[in-house]
Length: 126
Image 1 (cartoon, rainbow, N blue to C red):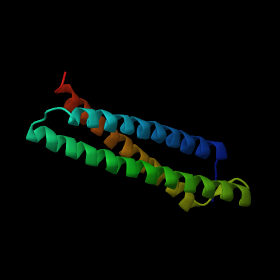
Image 2 (cartoon, one colour):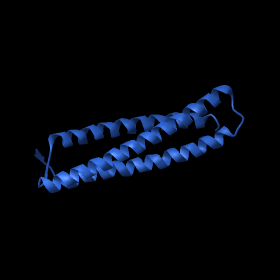
Image 3 (tube, rainbow, N blue to C red):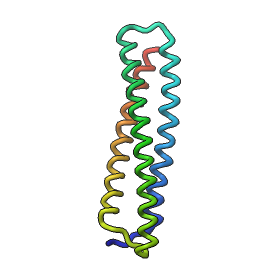
Image 4 (cartoon, rainbow, N blue to C red):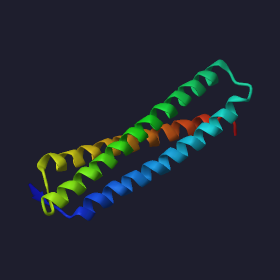
């Protein structure tokens, strides 16, 4: 068992959850813009791009939801361990925290790539 500050774990988890909420809102906004652009006269390639972007937005929204849920569960687990074990966490709980950080970082990277792809798509209409 390792002693760490509860607020360090909870602060990072809460920051991740807040950032994921921001990403979710941004993806929903992108979906609205995508629907607006789909109402225009589009080429076959553009229609395929709309479909692919729509699918990716959906997949990433599911990923955001799943990761937010995993972080929330992790927060409950760490809170319980801090209370029961007087400020100590099991090694597997710390490993879980690192794994969540890796998942969060990977998702952030994919979301930035998707945003860049969407911006390139929108650039066709300007």
